[in-house]
Length: 290
Image (cartoon, rainbow, N blue to C red; front, side, top):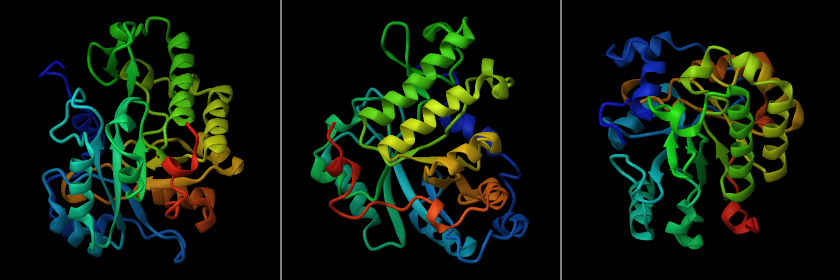
């Protein structure tokens, strides 16, 4: 990986960098009121980077937002400061969160992540979250779509053809992996992002929605990326696909769900529209035949 290339963490931090250095009290004061009083606020996309668990718990209490804590999981070929790659590492992550008022999750990488762990260990998690931002290159190798050389490595010169492959990648992930949540949904690489509305056609949205419904995968509303847009969220809700909230914001503003709350109000979301973790025995890794 190019050491000078921005990481996914840098990318999402830049998208969310609104007063990143401000005092927590100021950030809290700026938060909008929640939607309906009976709509639970759960941030399923919390990383502890530069924060630590105890500080995250304090922020969770102050914001009135329950946190789902995730760590990257998969083979060591995935370049992150921490990547859980075997049962021992996964169980340490789970043990760290045991007894804390949080949900336990992982953010998985690539299509081979499940081979790193036993089904029994994965089933100890409350949920598994992933995204489509690591994509097969022309040589079949993993490509981080936010990196500068990604357009050349994946063959993005024909943008319509790339989008069709990208949507197929969404479907393949949901069809073949025991996941609960598709995060960073509808994000586009920089060369396409400006024309989001043109590239995310109703037909492409429909393929993603149909797969999410068929395989029981929730779609994340990302507060950092401000995606998916309302035009995508409306058919997601109408189809009966569950939605989850995620900040994916590092540091003191973790758990800021402004965009999620805005979309919840616009959509009229109720409890039944929101994702909740499957009970023991019904986790995707237990219930699905893959």
